[in-house]
Length: 141
Image (cartoon, rainbow, N blue to C red):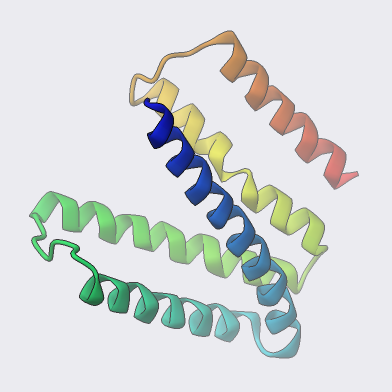
């Protein structure tokens, strides 16, 4: 990866981190004010409209292959399950625990990447995943 690509990756990663952190806090507040399932639906309705608007005003390709459409649809299904689980979790437990465990989705993605997709398994990656798991255990205490 070139330096310019890495900077873009870091920039967009930071934007994602900050906006999802804010979304988590606001989602928790919403789920305390209204039914968490309704809050989840409103949240993703707005997100979906925003994403659709972005596609329309940007230079995004509107070409959809059967495989790409299916994969995007299944990804959306899992997104919805995770979203509803998170909002309902807020009404049953601590924001700190629900948000931290939810944010550890990268551990699942990393394991799938290494075990199924053939990403390189390195000592550093395994140690990083182990530290993430230790962090989850510590936060849950």
